[in-house]
Length: 357
Image (cartoon, rainbow, N blue to C red):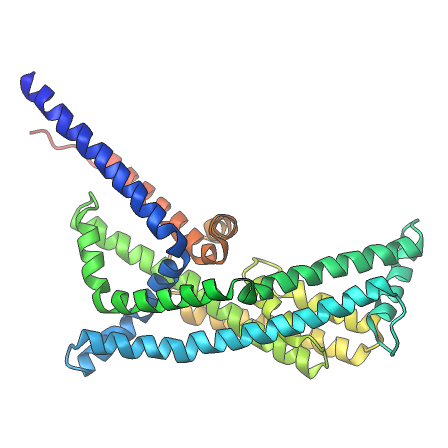
């Protein structure tokens, strides 16, 4: 009894201290959580290349990590910034034209936004017992709100320029150390996991497969589809091809409908504005090239070992975006996969026969 009482205070003190320190670390790291997550994700994806580069450089970890970090700057950061600038510029131009059209409906020139909205309003008015003027005003308002949302999405690049630069610098700084010391970090962290070595290996393998499936299978496919869609929009003469191409990247992660959420309305818009040939081209391009790319690119990156169904990925995707923002696209499904794996281990442990001492 005395031993139990003497051990009570140290346990309580250790628990309270650990909770306080954990909370303090959380608040310290919270402003940089996005940068840390992106750095960890990039380090994980680059780990096979990092290992090969180390071997070629005589196991010089720092040199390999530095070279890969510079490669990320040249191949990821710079193109992303340039694309963000072009997207924000086109989105601002689109929003400006829609705002001008909302303030003064008649816009000169064939195929203008006003002509398209008038045609659409008249067709909808033929189907519904609603005045055409009311439909037209509603369409202009909805279009203006959509354009403003697009500007806000792309304008995040400029909304906090200093914060963005700081986040990129932190992510690259952390990426270097993750590439150099990532294996040691994972090994030390797994020591704290209360699982046997076999289940630890399975857990790491499962999370690696799911992460590659989500990131490479979803992200790379979305980027390819968005690029192809942007090319098709540009060939069809769409003025805001970059805006719609970037929106296609976001739509590509939506199951079932996917990129059709963007290229079908664009084709309809072109048809209503009198550009029937361009509309047909976008429909054919979207069906034969953009949508087909999903069935070609995704299997190249998704490993058959990533045993996770579409439903958990979809729930993790939507919930992750709501909870963590853009990073949640990848973090949400991985967290769901981790929970499912731990539940599977718990079921296995309960089904195993207990050994009496």
